[in-house]
Length: 146
Image 1 (tube, rainbow, N blue to C red):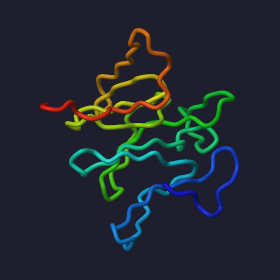
Image 2 (image 1 turned 180 degrees about the horizontal axis):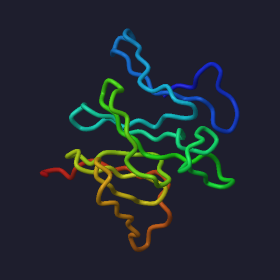
Image 3 (image 1 turned 180 degrees about the vertical axis):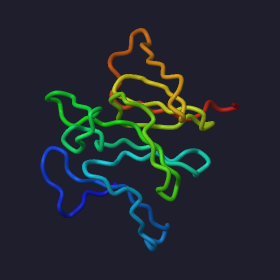
């Protein structure tokens, strides 16, 4: 993710880019107002999960725009194909810091510990005993021998 040259304010303009390993072929994958960022590649490399503030009422005049009140812009969870096509919202919930399960069947995201399928079904919020509020959900490595 990279901040655009004209970005400013509480919800600056960020977009997601890809490039070849040698730095050539820089390609912008997103181009909406607000922040598109915190990308996570699917295990098979065909999709990218990311969060976006494009649905925040500061960037959208849609009747179903979102707001956090006063705690900053509202981030929602999106998926796109590896080339940037097929961008679609996965959930209407506040979502940041997304990661894929090792088998690509689920996404985990914060705040809290939320798990959802890439098609937007099966949302579950976990509350493990003895664990405080999760701010940076991460699937973690697959156990050895799995």
